[in-house]
Figure 1: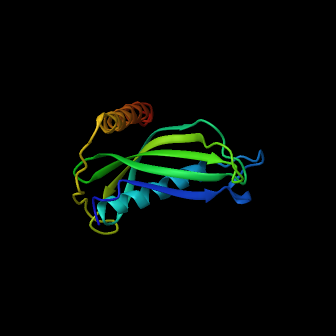
Figure 2: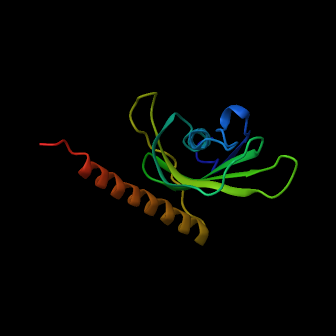
Length: 162
């Protein structure tokens, strides 16, 4: 049911094909997991097809090692008309036990569409219920605003030579 599933966690085992020569999971693999968890969360909230439109504030804090159990958690922190912002945390630990360690975090934004390659459609609104919710909604908006500033800077330096 749309508008009901605010949080989602996917779990993976870091496999030998996911890692580089140093035995750490490639950043691109972690980004793929983030996108998969975000997509599942966006479809769960919107009730329909959704596409990634932005990832902001991504930080790789600690490595994910070969054979780690990995949990990728997505939590809805803001909705626009057709957009959904999710705070993502990637945590890992030895599957035999031990403490979870925060490896990566970011904000990922999806837009709900009426069909594959279709038009944006409205998503169920989410309203913050507590101070932590309001703080996370503000955080999501600030991360995306900073990302827009970076995009503008890049565009300024990528203009074609005269």
